[in-house]
Structures are given as structure tokens and as C-alpha cells.
Length: 187
Image 1 (spheres, one colour):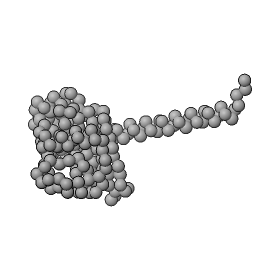
Image 2: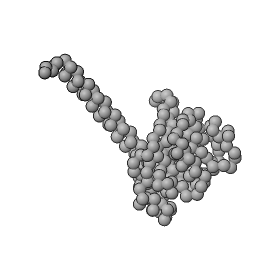
Image 3: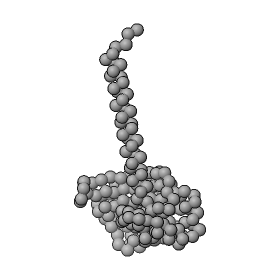
Image 4: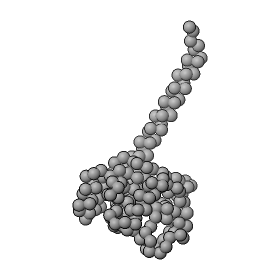
């Protein structure tokens, strides 16, 4: 049985191209995940990413980005947060360096904003808790998120027991009952 050199060469080239694409995709995914982990406050106890949806509108200065990244919180961090929130946030606030790690202001839920934002706020009754749709559509760049995580966040905004922190590069919601944390991108 003869092997045609041209087909063998093309087969190897095809396998090489597929492997190169897989390596590039894996590298991009790892860098992207590391980037979003780097946006979370130190000592918040976040682990793997459960959900990520981010979209950009435009490029460079003047471009806008909207997104939501949900992390799993480790059991130790959840226990520390639930047993002594003041000590937990003291450590989280002190650990941050650089503008993206500084989350000095934390608000316990329910979260009812003093002002409402964007189109999604038109259907919201005054005095009602914020919704993730309203928060991420502040500048008219709202996107759809997975319904499960929308419910999780909206429930967390409406009930006591979760915490919202604002920083230089986004907002964070710590949801100890769900063992989850969210990084919210608006801008």
C-alpha cells in the first residue's frame, strides 16, 4: 500500500493548524480568566469562573464595555464573611493596591439605589431594589445574561445577606448564601 506524500503532508498541516488554534484559544482563555480574577478584591476568596459574558462597544478611549463575571467563593471566605463582616471587609479593603483592587465602600443588601439608570429603570417602581439589567444598561449598552445568574443577582439585590462594593474598575457583589461573587462591568 502506497502512501501519497501530498495527502500525508496535508493531513499533518491540518492537524498542526487545529493544534495551533487550540493552543491560542487555551492561552486566550487563561489570560482572560486571570484578567478578571485580577479585578476582584484580594482576600475575597474567589475561585473558578462559573459564568462570563462581556461585550465591547467601540474601541479605545470612548469605547464602552458591559459585562458580568460570576465566580465561586471558597467556603473559608464565606464563613469569614458570615461570621464577622466588619473584620472581613477591613481585611479586603486593606489588601487592595492599585485602583482596580480598592473596594473601600461596601453596602449590605437590599440595594435600593438613590438614583436610577438607563432604559431598564423606566419600568422600575421607585424604592424597589436594583436589577442587574438596570445596572449594566446605565449608558445604553445593556446585554442579555444567563437567566439563572440574573435571578441570582436580582434576588441578592432584593434580600439581606449580600454585599455590594464599588471600585475603580467595576462593582463586586459578594453573595455568601450562594457561595458566589459577581464582577459587574459598566462603562
